[in-house]
Image (cartoon, rainbow, N blue to C red; front, side, top):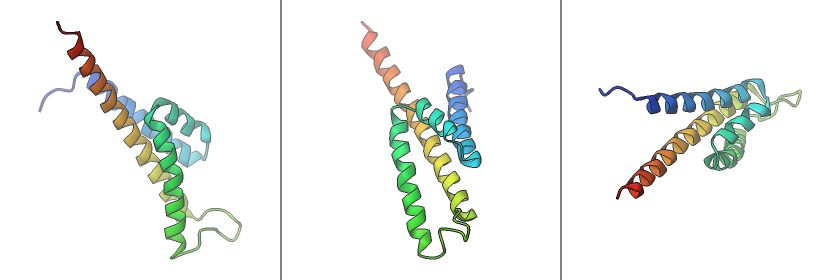
Length: 116
């Protein structure tokens, strides 16, 4: 197994930070963490943000076929909150990985174009 270089560690830390921000956003229900995750993953973060709303609609729609999607007090049930946090974390983590791959591809293309 090859040793992970400094850029590999930086990419892994970046992906972990974005995933952590998304998880914190879901657990604390604080939009600032989601905003930070979106900003860190631009431009792919915008697609992840749209996917968050699509996932929420799918979770509510499909889950509503089998159980209630609102509690007696009007709050979301625990299953919907937990599924939403997991979905959001996965989507933003995937956006961070896609951003890393995009940056690596652009950097490789730039290195190739600089060669004489």
